Amino acid sequence: MINIFQPSLDDKELGALKEVFESNWVGRGPKTEEFEKKFSEKIGVNSKNVCTVGGCTQGINAILEILDLNSDDEVIIPSLSFIGIANSVVRTGSKVTFCEVDERTMNTNLNYISDVVTDKTKVLILIHYGGYPCTDMDEIIEYCNDNNIKIIEDNACSPFSKYKGKNTGVLADFGVWSFDAMKVMTTGDGGMIYCKDKDVMSKLRKHLYFGLTSKSGLSNKVDNRWWEFDVVSSGGKFVVNDIMSTIGLEQLKKVDGFIKRRKEIADFFNANLSKLDWVKVPPTIKGEVESCYYMYWIQFENQTIRDAVAKFLRDNDVYTTFRYYPLHWVNFYKNLVGDTTSLKNTEAAAVKTLCLPLHPSLSDSDIKLIVKLIEECSHEL
Ligand SMILES: *Cc1c(COP(=O)(O)O)cnc(C)c1O
Image (cartoon, rainbow, N blue to C red; front, side):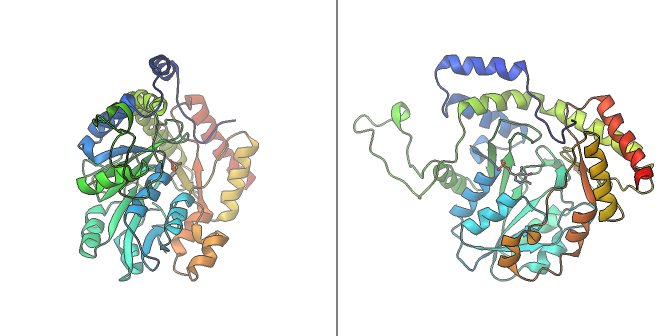
């Protein structure tokens, strides 16, 4: 079976882990601090503005919690979003509003956002779909600043993607990365948060660890009664440990190579699949942007063809999928948000799109096979 996503881990991670085991410190410690430092350098920000977190969903959850939203405050997300993000909004007690996306890029834009903004809108959570940056970030950020709307970039699928030379995830108020098993780089689970405002970051950092105001144990500078503590918020435990961070440090060294291979594969698919007149390859992204090539997708005339291609590939041991199934089609959210008649592009994309395998472990013969099978599909249809 050719997997759609797959982690790339080897002796390098194993060797580094041996060192951590021998140090007898596997909890949150020096490796995590080093990981935060190296990661912040790689994305070109101060390490004070980043913090590890147990995952992208946890990170967005924590950010929404410290924003103190009221029950009538609204949070905008594309309906084409990861389910955990919508759930995080609901868990803070605020309202989810779905916005539309472009049918081809599956990214949202300023028009679709402003269409659903009301005077209750407090937060926008956007995705750079498949690693391809939203191309009007400057305009979106200016508009949100003017309207007092905080922006969280769900950067789970766009690590090291660039917008005008800057990393996505650090363009606005907050950014959150995921290092879960399926992502461009992995720590098993885990993630990273960027926060632009240092004071908010300081509060957030505490909130990620029970809201504690000081460190405990030996690192506590207090000479007596070091077991006493105080909290600034009813924070949770959203942290990672040195086992995960050690894996992250190794992955960080390799990630440019991963992305290079991803691009080669995407270029190969583009060159070959664009010859088929019944297949649409991803649109060329205009503007000064660069993708990390997290996902490769193709689009078809209609759902019947898409579904037939998916089935034919799976029958031939190639696994494909569609990300992200529209949330307004999920019963829980359908009941919650009511009328969504304006999400026409989202619905069109959801029935016509198929994500193909894309990860650095795919061999040249794997990707040739995938192309060959798709070519054969035309006889099946
Ligand atoms: C994978 C993914 C997430 C979830 O990340 P976790 O680290 O598993 O919580 C969130 N958003 C997007 C867009 C994703 O692709």
